[in-house]
Length: 209
Length: 209
DNA sequence: ATTATAATGTTAATATATTCACATTTTATG
DNA sequence: CATAAAATGTGAATATATTAACATTATAAT
Ligand SMILES: NC(=O)c1ccc[n+]([C@@H]2O[C@H](COP(=O)([O-])OP(=O)(O)OC[C@H]3O[C@@H](n4cnc5c(N)ncnc54)[C@H](O)[C@@H]3O)[C@@H](O)[C@H]2O)c1
Ligand SMILES: NC(=O)c1ccc[n+]([C@@H]2O[C@H](COP(=O)([O-])OP(=O)(O)OC[C@H]3O[C@@H](n4cnc5c(N)ncnc54)[C@H](O)[C@@H]3O)[C@@H](O)[C@H]2O)c1
Image (cartoon, rainbow over all chains, first blue to last red; front, top):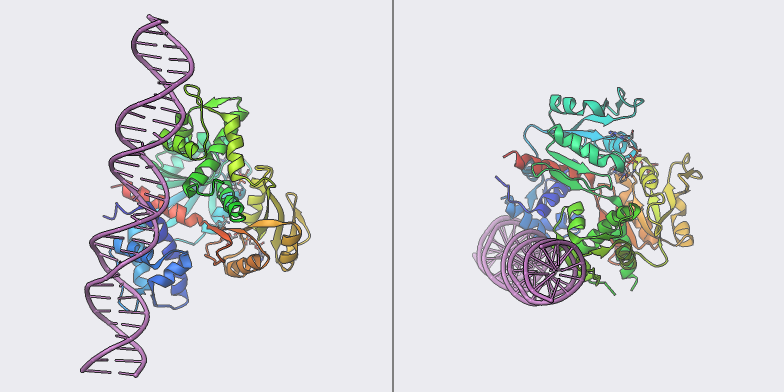
């Protein structure tokens, strides 16, 4: 069910929901495709197309029901049981992420951090216990952790990815600038902030004529 | 010149360079398209196509000259004079970014941070001076800052974007989860880590069958 | 009640991105 | 020197993503 949604649509559904949650908080009950589109800097057709793909039907002249749409998007992109997540590397970025994610999405719980610094192991940071990387396999199985967010120094990226795979992880979000290799049954997403910044800089340059 | 490169190609060029710089450090002088491809998890044809688009020609049976390719990519995506960058919001993420970027790309210099917390204003963090947001317009003009990275709390995103635009910024990289609006002459890139994590979680879920 | 307006939903068209297929050529090898 | 192997470069084909065009219809205005 819903396995063949385009990757881009998945990303946008997440973004739509983020925007819709804000609308819901403000008490807004309905929203038009062009309103969602405006927020996301895309076209209204794009929004309607995405919603068509997930089989959601709005009300003509009233738009989409905010609450219902949030729920439907949740049914599609969330897992019923929720997904447990681990942070690999409790440094600047790791801690920042834990702070940021705390309580944001109930379906995605950061339940463990891992580090090799003895000063950090055993402590709790923003409610997340920090374990030794040596215990990765054990803890990941015990806590049923499915996804790992890598924020270790680049030189440990390869090793950490290997450890995660060996421990049976199912998805990796790699924030180190070192690309890693994983078997095909592990979903991998990599993001480097420098690439984003260089992209912005490039388009600034060419806009300068 | 080179204005019509696909967006995806720009991103990959940045990634190729990142990988090539590591090869260069290791003393590697040449590299094959399939080696670059392996690192980036893409196909060799994709790599060759991108290099074709930027007009770079390798040597048959020897591959691409690492140093030359790094330089060419630099000529295309970097600005000759370099680009000055500001961080808006010197909190967890802002400081982490400053740390991370420090000395990474000589063409992209973080030359200023802005905050509203009086305890931070006037200090220097990792070599970057922190100014009051009230002085944004002045400092951005004085220091010829072209790009702003937004790491303020979400509720200040709209205001900060407005201030940046008013100050004459040319590009914004928005890390707050609140989408902002900018005029068409300002290039905007937005990234939310939760969207990435939700995407990973989704593909983990559907891989579970 | 009629008409105009403004929204959805969707097919068809277009644009962007990737991959296939293969001609070409350098280099290594027998 | 002939042959095989392995790489590049690229037109054509395909796949993915977006946009245009428009039929349909609920609602508001007259
Ligand atoms: N700071 C940023 O804004 C930023 C941005 C993008 C990417 N990154 C990347 O994220 C990574 C972390 O950056 P940071 O600024 O948080 O660095 P950091 O040095 O503050 O944190 C790294 C943490 O990883 C721990 N660690 C080291 N080896 C480990 C291992 N084998 N297993 C588990 N933990 C280990 C260290 O003890 C430390 O706590 C780096 O690869 C960096 O390039 C950082
Ligand atoms: N921490 C993360 O990992 C993370 C990840 C993704 C996105 N974000 C987003 O990035 C933003 C910053 O996150 P953080 O964890 O660094 O928060 P933070 O509270 O640590 O830092 C925010 C900083 O912005 C300053 N600030 C407040 N109003 C300002 C204004 N008007 N102008 C300039 N500075 C102002 C604050 O004084 C503070 O120093 C938030 O929007 C957050 O949602 C954070």
